[in-house]
Amino acid sequence: MSRYMDVHSGFVGVKAQQLKEAHERDVAIEADEGVHFERAWLDPVSGKAFCLSSGPSREAVMRIHERAGHPTAEVYELPIEVN
Amino acid sequence: MSRYMDVHSGFVGVKAQQLKEAHERDVAIEADEGVHFERAWLDPVSGKAFCLSSGPSREAVMRIHERAGHPTAEVYELPIEVN
Image 1 (cartoon, rainbow over the protein chains, first blue to last red):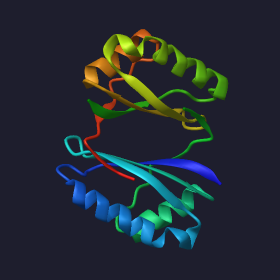
Image 2 (image 1 turned 90 degrees about the vertical axis):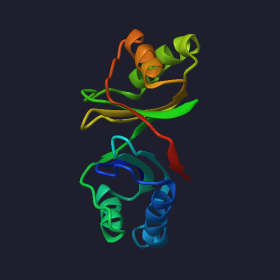
Image 3 (image 1 turned 180 degrees about the horizontal axis):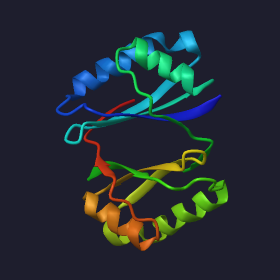
Image 4 (image 1 turned 120 degrees about the vertical axis):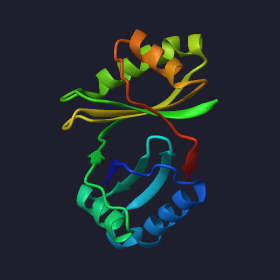
């Protein structure tokens, strides 16, 4: 299992409830790919969203996001982390 | 206080110990601006680093990173979050 950060663009003006619903669409199907979406953050001014997950591969994360209706090619594997 | 995500580029091949040291340089001076750096993640293949913080303003986060030797203009305010 690895950790991933994905970046989405174009979410200008999106509200908290919409981000919650988008996240819930990921979570509802994440088990199909062995992925777990941990947290998501949104800057509604720039439209950037960030999503932290863990899973078996970048492609698994991308497949869940695509099926949930918010595909992104920008998924980074994060083998290094500090707290 | 708001939450922020900043994105750094060009950290290709950086090791865990180097990210830890960079993070510690931020933490050593963060109180000067009322900022707190919570977590940082690195993809050493693409060279992208992500840093989650809280603080009074984007500019405060940017000043600490600049003084610590790793400036970035890419700092996003994150008023919306899901867990």
